[in-house]
Length: 577
Image (cartoon, rainbow, N blue to C red):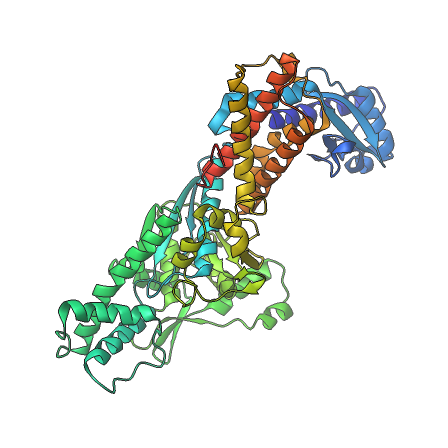
């Protein structure tokens, strides 16, 4: 049983029944009961749950909210619920206060559900694809990939906990212009080993990894590619270097504790003619045209129609300066955009009802046209969810860090994971919402004290384990408490902590609905804070055996919640520190 959910249902029924009684008694006009909400007040001193029904009912009942609230309070029956009383506040809010049974039931929930506590069936098993990182395979992964990896992996975990069938995917761009540029860059570096005056392409990839690949091929195979055709040379070098880059990406992700369900290769879309098929589909729908030897997509028309349907004015739309997009270049090669449409169609065709992409904020302009393209091919663009991620800066000693101390080069994901504990990176990257810029403090990330958020949370778990061990040395072991014993947990620090624990499942659902795993890092950090506050105010080992067992039960409940969050995010949950 989820106690908080049950309590809200009880309260909804009690309030509705009280209104019906008030109508029957002539205290309120006969009218249809209006929609109203039940929520937690901003200040819990004003109650544990509150309703605005008196305000929303003022128009239909044709009376002042305060009189409606008084009629409801007079007729409400709270017996056999998790509430002991209600009070009217302000112009007509009705605040309700939990009984001891509520708090006891929350502890019982955690005991009974254990590692499943916080889980729900909210998502009803809906198949959701979460695509994240999807870095260009022509070079090393960078800091943006580090943030995107942590956000995407933890979001997929949140969705799973909320009852969705989440699936993690990495899209490998192993086709198109970037691979041609990769090939030309490799060729130039390879030829420079054996010949003088070989110019490097102006738009080539300048990274040292290109030189390293060329040298590695030359060391193994010598000059065997000098006298072959340009196309054969480039093809051979790409076939040598690209798998190494992809293998490095996979090993970096695994080092980061990220394991994908699928690595999807763009080349597979071309080989299966799915890119051509989606261009043909758009052409059949009258949404393409030819100009200057290229095939264009009527992006401006599609996006304008969408914006007009959303109530936007033509003046607003004109300011966006929407443009059409090329699908097939003059040379007959499809663009990245064409492949991207085919890829997203393929995801929906595989049975995913919602597809979530984690993109850098620089892709902001791509969001509307991709959603529009989904609508254009007969899918629902609203089912493509794009989480835009802002830039991240590395700082140390208050200064921005751009170079790795170890290599003296621009910091890559692998450099970060060599310098910072993986658990710190995964947690810290999820402490700020994706749409906010972030300073990642290297000094804090390596600290083993309460300044490091993940250490702070882990320490709370380890502290509880230490309490259990200390009590065991004195022959005290936890046992199942009776409800009356759990009701002894009535001090402010105890009630605040239990209230927080009760919200775990709702927090998971909220994070899933808003595609925001940072809600859960904040939640578990607050859990640790409230536990330390409780522990510093109330001794666990006391003379009253029943109270001691109740407090031990509370400690164990907190331990379970912290472990469930850290396990969900694939972060170590130590028993000693």
